[in-house]
Image (cartoon, rainbow, N blue to C red; front, side, top):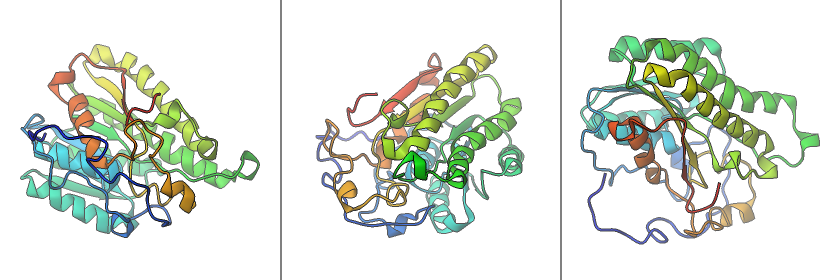
Length: 295
C-alpha cells in the first residue's frame, strides 16, 4: 500500500454530494460523475500475494476493480467475471492488472446461471493453474417504493445475483482450495443497518453474513479461511443504477462520521489483509469499512 504521510480522511476524496445521474444496471464507470477512484494511481503493492491465483466476481468495476488492481500489484494472478454489457469496464480492469505484470483472465457471463458459476471456477483453475483466493463480490440492488410493489422478477434477480451465485461459485470452488486458501464475501452495512428502500438487498446481505460464519466453521479444519467485508456508502456504478433521486444522491455518504462517501480504493486494503498471511488467524469475521458508521 501507499507509504505516503497520513492524510485527513474527511477530505482525502470527494467530500460533497453527487450530481443527479441515473444508469440502467449494470452501470458503467465512464458514465459516472465524478469518476470513482480504484487506486489506479495510488495503490502501491509489496508482493504480499505472490504466486497466488484469485477469482473475483464482479471484478470489472467498483470495489471489484479496486481489489483486482490491488491483488495484481501484490503479485497475484487475477480472473474476474463481468456481464457481457460490462465489457468496456472489464477491458480497463484487465489493462491495469496486466500492467502489474501478472496474468489476467476476464470471464463474461451471467452469474445467475448455475452453469456459468461452475465454468468460471473450472476456467480459472485450468488457465491460472489453481485457485487460492475467491472473492464473492458481484451484487445487484434497486430502490423499492414499498413491499407491496416489489415484483417477484426483481426479487428473483436480487436473490439469484447476491445469494444463489455465491453459493453456486463457492460450491464449485471448495474442492479446488488447499490449506491457506481464502474466501472473502462482500456483504454490506445493510446487513446490520438496513434501509427500507433496499429491503430485499439488505435481506441478502444479512444472509451473506450467516454464510460467512457457517462456512468458516465448516472449512476452518481444512485450513481454509472465510471472511467478509461490510462496505458502507461507496461510490460505485451500483449507486447511480439504484434509482435514487437527486436529493438522495446529493446526501449519499454525508451521514457517516467521516462525512463523505467512500471510494473503491479505500476498500482494497481490507481484501488484501484478509487474503494474505497476516490474517492467518482471522476467519468468520466481518470487517467493516463504513466511514465510521456503526454496524
